[in-house]
Image 1 (cartoon, helix red, strand yellow):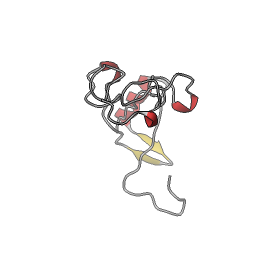
Image 2 (cartoon, one colour):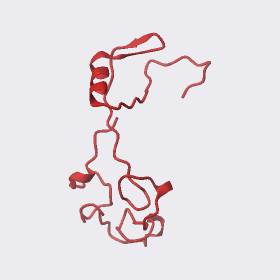
Image 3 (cartoon, one colour):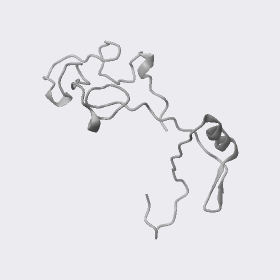
Length: 116
């Protein structure tokens, strides 16, 4: 957000969510109008799936989590802060020797879309 008395810079971001793929595709092709200013160039940005930092499951966030905590480092049933030092990393998604959510994970269910 910017202060009302500050000028808008050369670049800015605005998130817009659509109810249909057709609506999104139309805006990507045609641009859109904001406060009587035509914005001809629009960039697609895919948002990652919601993942809880407490239990590491998808579909909800930590503030609403009622599941058993899971460590993102060793996959143990404790929160990351309580992970004993010197424990080897283990991924909850694939069982590999890396932390859960690591970009090296080959599990397609947790593949990371390109950054916006």
